[in-house]
Amino acid sequence: MARDTNNPNKYQRSDPLNPKKRGRPSKKAAENENGDGVFQVFDDKRGDALIIEQVTERFEGLKMYAEDIALGKLPALIISGAAGVGKTFTLMEILEKMHGEGKVVFKRTAGYVSTIEMYRILFEHRHEGNVVMFDDTDNVFYDDNSLNILKAACDSIPVRTVSYRTKSTVEVTEDDDLDNWDVEEQGLPSEFEFKGTCVFVTNIDFHAYLAGPRTRVTPHIEALLNRAKYLDMCLHAPRAVALWIQYMITTQHILEKPVHGLTREQAVEVLSFIVDNYKQIHKPSLRTAVKLAKDVKNHPDRWVMLAKMTELKPVVIK
Image (cartoon, rainbow, N blue to C red; front, side, top):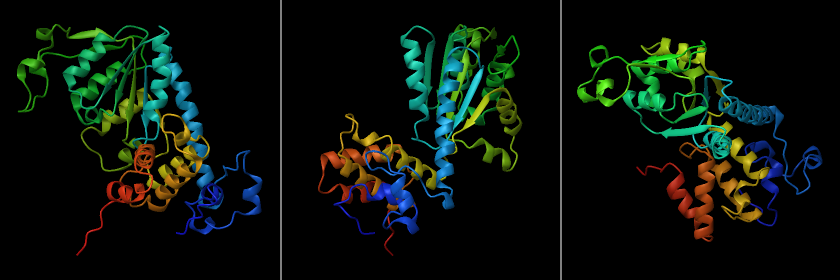
């Protein structure tokens, strides 16, 4: 697709994700520009405006729920959406601020977490005013023992008793260290009352998961969602993610902020690359834009070549 480098706002106004509207902006489009010439309305016929409206509302809801979690008004919150769209950033911005102000005790755990380690984290943050975030620890959602513990911690009943019996009552795989399954040997009680709150950030689309074939953990997932607030950010499909990237670049100017330092024209070029190629990008996200911005800064004349090699799925030459 030809680019008009003399018109850096062309792509925002003409909605590059809609092939039928890549040309000259319509009169309606021109009327919906803001003060700096950035078009903020997406194509209603393609459902783009609805997608952006849903996602922006859900991020507002996420901020509200983050404060509710910090104040102990909710026992648990599950946030679902594609990787790199701002879920963790939004939560941590609020929770770390409140932690710094002494309003909460905030603990974030990311990556793989074993059942016994999850039990330990919950015990250490069992008091009222403690918030535990499990960020991309998706393995816990596929383990019966972990799910049973989480169901107890996230329950809505007045007294939440979390228990973990000795190794003789726990399903152990051949890879597990048997000594680690005796909680009392590790200085942990076999049960305790949990008064804290839990936040889970995941890429799993639980609505889609529960609509699929039932597995051994399906009843546990259903029970967990019944206990916790479940907020789906409506960001799973590549097109929806690409629209969100476009929105964040064109209206929030994320690449023009000092941390990335691109010019308006450079930001538009990054956006153009993403929307032209989002079907070939493996898991497009805001991180994609950030990585491209680094190449633009480091190699302004050859960043496109680098982007094609690193961000696009390779073409197999037969």
